[in-house]
Length: 252
Image (cartoon, rainbow, N blue to C red):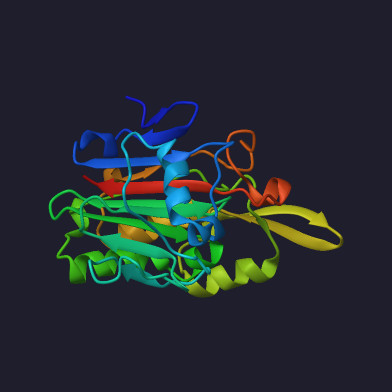
């Protein structure tokens, strides 16, 4: 069975589609929404989002995303907050759509089918470096009583190891924070007298998840590179675009 289901508007993960109480999607070009649009006119933002959604979304939450490791628990008390300096959202509320926006960074969807908890995490290379996904899993286990073996993780299209080119300073930071990633770092070309490298940040996040006790079969990666497939997805590395792909997850 294919792990992805696609149409001309969005893709979905087959694994998450097994649950009738869950809706999720990851948008394709030309669709794009920004945090500024969300802040300026939330009703208009919702109308735009509903042109994509398989169901009518009534309430959505989009954090401003600042490449932090901060994660907010969405409750009835903070539905109208701005969620500043926040890069992850977790909730057990029904009919509240959690959103992230990306253009090469990883959008990571989380679901605990036992305790009915969802999460949506924005993990750029800085978030991956500082283990934002570990923060998310810890909140689910400590605050929502999730068991790691019950959590499903789906990593949406992002820039992959084929295209995530960095200088040695970034490589050094990763080596300082992780002990088992030599196989995730690749030698690139020399450009302007500087050695370049490539890093597999998706696999690094996967290793973190496995170390926390998640099952390998419950960690699903799209294996789609936004830069390679810039015709389908917004890619900042390719065209410095202001466009953003939207990842959404909602409990019905």
